[in-house]
Amino acid sequence: MYSDSTIERFKSKYTIAELRDCWEWEASCIPTGYGWFSIVCGHTVGAHRVAWEIANGPIPDGLIVMHLCDNRKCVNPGHLVLGTNQANQYDKWRKGRSPIPTWSKRNPKVTGKQKIEIKHLYHSLGMTQVKIAQEYDLSIRQVQYIINGK
Image (cartoon, rainbow, N blue to C red):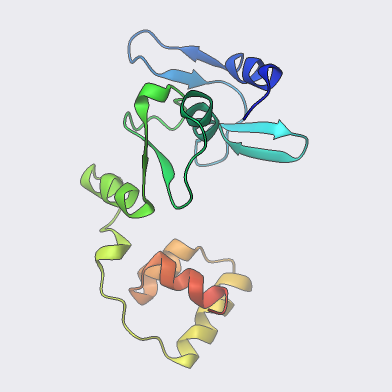
């Protein structure tokens, strides 16, 4: 899947911390703290995803790579597991790192006027999907559908 030179370049960008056994990513990170790795010019992906794929092969459609250690910079394949977005939301909620999972909330019908408001909040005012979901008591998925006109 990845060339030997890409794998070697990837391996040069983390260190293994003895105390926690996490492999700490030391290169680029996005603002949320996750490591970021450039596969080819202009194409970057989460470093933890690359670590999973190097160790285990492609990530099946519909699954994400979750950190068991809760260290966003960790690229140790032994600390990574595949799961659904719903499982990841539940894990974050269970560990006290997020509000109640959006999938557990009731998804009420949204009026046409509310859809217009939601699109305006997102596109014109730059409000995050998470904040919109909280304001309207919706799931993130439902907000995404509204924003994308589905």
